[in-house]
Image 1 (tube, rainbow, N blue to C red):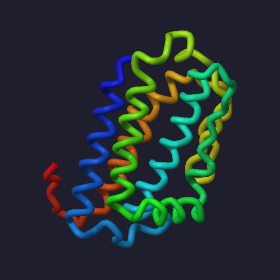
Image 2: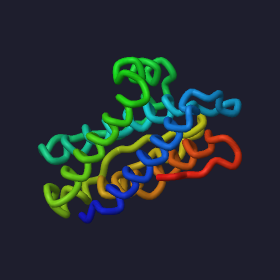
Image 3: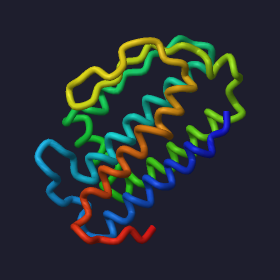
Image 4: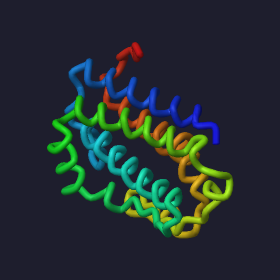
Length: 167
């Protein structure tokens, strides 16, 4: 599997996160019902960990599931922020997780492994988006095409009006 789109999505997310952090808006009060930058990054770090676990299980021949509900839990998000050491630690963690996923999802997995159906539950804003079998390949593609770009946009929305994205 070509992981270039995934690597590019991680780069764009991390550039946006650095832009927000450099602007001094990393902990700005987001609109009602939205997360601040640290919460967004912690959510991404949890999603990454769940994805790494699923990929590793498939690579080891074990059965796995994929469930993003823990990545939506407020207590867990705050714990990950604290354990990572805040914004800079979260960005480092995400960078390393992205490297790991690109290495694991690339030439390491066979086509059969990438096509492995994974029981998947995905929620967003309290609504079930997915509750079905999803090929492992589609979980990785979904990160690159939907999850990471969506959170990049969410981070950039925290910048003050008229701010320039420099990265």
